Image 1 (cartoon, rainbow, N blue to C red):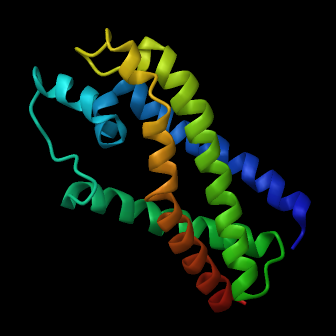
Image 2: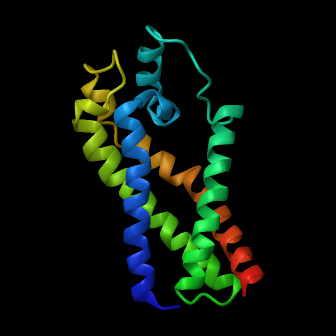
Length: 165
């Protein structure tokens, strides 16, 4: 693989992911409610219609599955562009990009932007500074199911590389 291309693609993928998260979060923060800590969800649902947010709910599984399919297709194309030729090249590429985006999401988007900028807060939860600043909640989400998603995306990307090559 050509590592300079991998790095460039990681930066591009982070930018695309950021736009994909930030635009809905600004216009409709409730669209991503399943990614908020439970205390914030409960406070929000005191004044808004409740929707299913459990990690294994049909809605959450559907959203995450669609994301895995879309990201894997994009990652397969990116892996081939970066010179991946084998299943294992695709696996490594997929995991590297997934971990890069996951780290950015956790350590910058969640810990800095969403924790400190009130424009990203759900209506009725603007006062919950401590709950928005939770670090362990986001690290746990990155570790599990993040690790499972990284492995799954890596394998699907590897299979995609095998099919394309």
